[in-house]
Figure 1: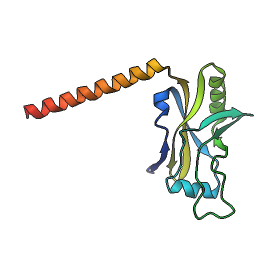
Figure 2: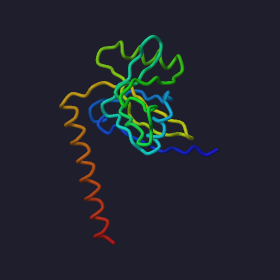
Figure 3: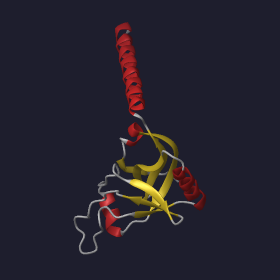
Figure 4: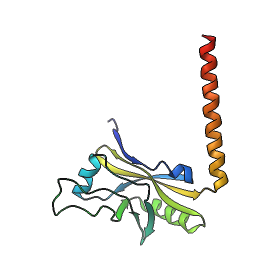
Length: 156
């Protein structure tokens, strides 16, 4: 069976602002109009966060806009949504957030075999000098690839 994955939204700023230590795949409890809206590829997860409360994981502040053809059954765009994880994964998340400086952030939302999934990560915040260092390394790598590419074109 081939696993078809369709990415709905990614949190591109997450890896810039945080060091991601561990990644989990979680299912999301959604209503019908939320799924229809997601199938149209409409979601924003940049402002979202995840927390553990009462032995359950919750994603809050994920924006799934209202379904255009929805009626009175439409959902609230920024409601909190329950995440489906194994108990040992929830315990690991809870343990990590007890430590100073760690948080749980959504990294991307996608459909896997027709089911909505949220990839979450245990993350530590980056300091400003860490961000500058990462940007410098990225620029250096890009310049090296560009130089190597032009060198290859000259030799051929």
